[in-house]
Image 1 (cartoon, helix red, strand yellow):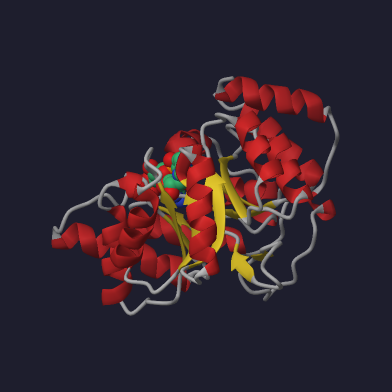
Image 2: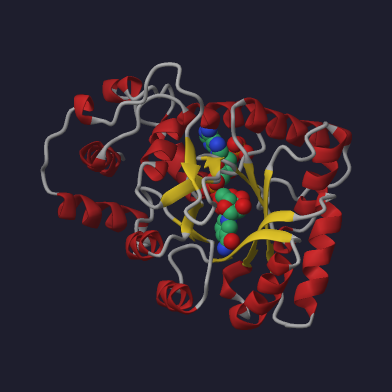
Amino acid sequence: MDRRRAIASLCAAAGALATTIASAPARAAGDGPLRRAIPKGRGETIPAVGLGTWLTFDIGDAAAERARRGLVIDALLAGGGGMIDSSPMYGRAERVVGDLLATRGHAGRVFSATKVWTPFERQGPEQAAESLRLWRLPRLDLLYVHNLLQWSAHLKTLRALKERGQVRYIGVTTSHGRRHDEMLDVMRREPLDFIQITYSPADTSAERVIDEAAGRGIAVVANRPFDGGALVDRANRLPLPGWARELGCDAWAQVLLKWIVARPGVVCAIPATTDPAHMTQNMGALHGPLPDAAMRRRILEHLQRSP
Ligand SMILES: NC(=O)c1ccc[n+]([C@@H]2O[C@H](COP(=O)([O-])OP(=O)(O)OC[C@H]3O[C@@H](n4cnc5c(N)ncnc54)[C@H](OP(=O)(O)O)[C@@H]3O)[C@@H](O)[C@H]2O)c1
């Protein structure tokens, strides 16, 4: 289903409910950055917006490029964010993140999330060890099986790493609305802590997966929150409505992120960026009121009317 049809079908289901900003759940002025509980985290919370690294952190050693990515991580942490998401699939991204965390004095300040991505079971432990080396960490906060590749075999490895204390949480990922039935099957069969899935106003197909995860106490991380950039670019061609400002948003990127993390079951969205100013802007979504269900429908309707 393409983006416009996805939005249209959700809006149709939503009906013509009127809404007002007054019905949005209140967050008191001065509240700290929005955090969400990890259902299996025994009270642990994480910031509701993090940072993805696909493409954007797959860079070489050029000082200017490295410095710019360093400023992105600085802005993530200065804004109250925490999760950095990477993968062996993302080329040099894990190395770049590990180098920048160490050299900028950020070691231990991020929620590290990466993946195992290999068709070969025997390579799972080696790949996890390499990730620890590249991130320069004694343990990872979260290790997923990337894109459900060899999930049954790799989840055994991930469970063993968790028992040994080298990984705190485990999960599986998919994206682009793919393989939701298989994701549901894995959640029903395996004791997972997290899943990661594509969810945004451009792709709402994961709703039933999110509900199943929430019912099972599995935390949901939303990848591709800006549809790879196309969604935020399209939204930015529209004037920012007055109700967006009442939600505490001064940019569409913040409206989109709030729409995602206001969804029950979603604990974190992980936009990628090469731009420190965009990172700071994205962190703005951690402040102010969140849209309630009616306001989320209104946001979708508004985007549907965009050219
Ligand atoms: N199967 C999986 O496990 C899987 C699959 C897909 C993605 N992921 C994860 O999810 C992360 C996010 O997804 P994604 O990288 O595909 O795309 P995305 O986060 O939806 O979009 C990234 C794009 O948005 C732009 N952007 C970011 N903030 C902006 C802002 N405030 N204003 C305007 N533009 C902005 C960025 O451009 P600028 O550089 O110009 O800011 C970038 O081109 C990935 O990096 C990865 O970590 C995981």
